[in-house]
Amino acid sequence: MRLAIALLAGTGLALSASGPAQAVTTVDIPAPTTGGVSATVKFHGTVVPKAYHPDPTAYFGDRKCLNTYHDYDPTPGCGGFKLDVELHNVRHQPGYLAGLPSTDDRFDAYADTARTFGCLQPDGTFDHDTGFVVRTEQQPLTHTYYTTQTSWVLSQQARYPDQDTGPGFYVNFPAVEVDCPEGMTPTQYGLKVTDINVTVADDNTFGHSTWHTPGPFYG
Image 1 (cartoon, rainbow, N blue to C red):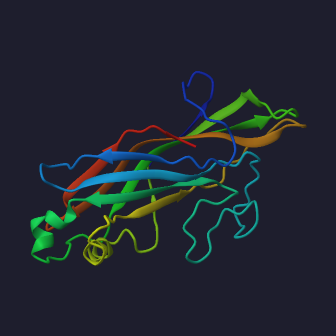
Image 2 (image 1 turned 120 degrees about the horizontal axis):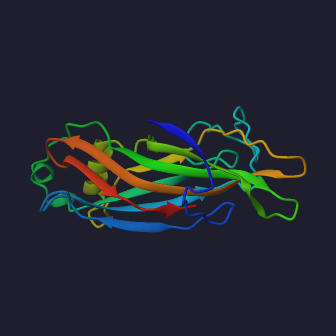
Image 3 (image 1 turned 30 degrees about the vertical axis):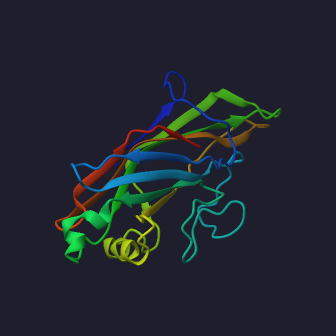
């Protein structure tokens, strides 16, 4: 994983409005092989803190950056997003029909992320001269409870034959230091997510597969 911080000027990063966004974007991804397992990914639950004052030690409150037990969401202090995956045509795979277990423990997911930070002027407008971008290439997405276990996905596919099931992921970002001139307010101005990859290495049902979508997705 490589982390780089670049000045906003000249980056060409497309930006959305600041604040907690709740837009949902859904993308269908074909099966990696003919007759294989296809996927639908849903990008949602984005949190982009307009007033950016994260507390890296807080488990509660508006500045929280840490999740409590069984808490699988981006936090209001540090922000992030969620990614849900539905897997299709699983029940027609030879390994599934034969009742074979998966040879891989879980699904994994990765994405490139770019978070834009800077300062708000007293009238609430973004001061582009203060802007900078924090980029992470192929950041691992965090597993949402047991939903990424291949055994759980197979059991859900069998238990609910009219419903396609897949793994769930989320990202809760680490805190970033944003220094602003007196009278200005630190802010996260935008979030851009690209090159999402969901992977598994299973010899029976799912195959050695990567479901990829370039995006971009915005928060």
